[in-house]
Length: 138
Image (cartoon, rainbow, N blue to C red; front, side, top):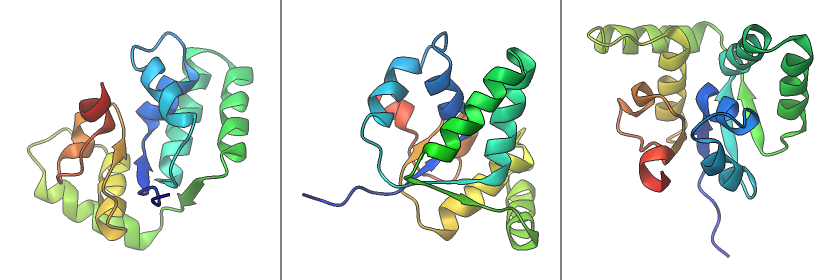
């Protein structure tokens, strides 16, 4: 059996999977049923927690964190000075885009780890050429 390619996991994919009202929910249910190795940044986890806290409540936000903790295929890369410096360069490169620091950190990580697939619903995560799974399977 061929080894699965590592994919970058963005906030939108986590929200889509955990929120049944999301239009991409069925796609991410399918993808999470047999996921490849996944990598993300700590800011994505913070964004997801904040989203569930604001949209729903503390219980749903904690359930989100429990899901992340149990996701054994997920590597969470902490955001430190190196990541921020790389992301800042990308923010400057794409200064014509409304790119968040979290998105730029994700783009930097995908380049750094040579990730070739991106689980995201955000078109900005495709700026460096990594294909978004919503365009391939959606």
